[in-house]
Length: 252
Image (cartoon, rainbow, N blue to C red):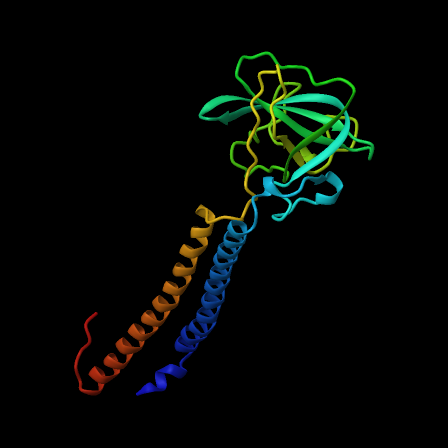
C-alpha cells in the first residue's frame, strides 16, 4: 500500500518536508536566541550602574561606542568650529532643533557636540569662543533607522538630518569622530535645553525584541503546518488506494 511513497511525486514531497523542517527549526531557534540576547542585555543594563553615574572618562578611552560605553560621560577639549542645526527634533512633545557644534580637538578630528535643544523659531546662540572642555553623554552615530532622524536629504545649508561621521564628513573640511556627545548641563544664557541621552540600540525589551519572539513562534508553527499537510496528503493517498482496492469510486 505504501509503495506510492517511492513515486517521483512523493519523493519531491518528502525531500521538501525533510529540508523544510530543519530549516524552520534553525530559523526559529535563531530568532529565539536573538530574543534571549536582548533579555540578557536588558537584565545586564538594569543590574549595572546608570551610565551617567559611572566615572567620567576622556573621550579616547570610551571609543568606539558600544553598549557598554554608550551613555557614559565623556570629556573632550578643543575649540568650536562649524555649527549646524538638526531640524525636526522633538523634546517634551515640542518641535525644535538640536544645536550641533563641532569641537575641533588636538587629535585633528572634530567631535559633534549637541549643545542643546532649541524651540522652533528661536535665534541660534553662537558657540563659545576659545578653548573649552565639554562633558557630555557619549552616543552612537545615528542612521536612517534611528527614531526622529530626517533622512530625506535636501536640507538647507547649515542643517543636517543625521548625526554621524558619514553625514558630516561632506559638510566640513576636517575629519569627524563617528560618535557624538550631548551636553549634560545647559549653557547659561543660551536658552538651550539639554538633550537626554538615548539608551543604546538593542539593549532593551523594545518592539524589535518582541518581534523576534513573534518570528520564533511563526517558524515553529510552520513546522507543525508542514507536518500536518504531509500527514493529510499521506492519509488521502492511502484512503484512495484502499477505495480503489475495494472497487469504490473516490470523490473528485
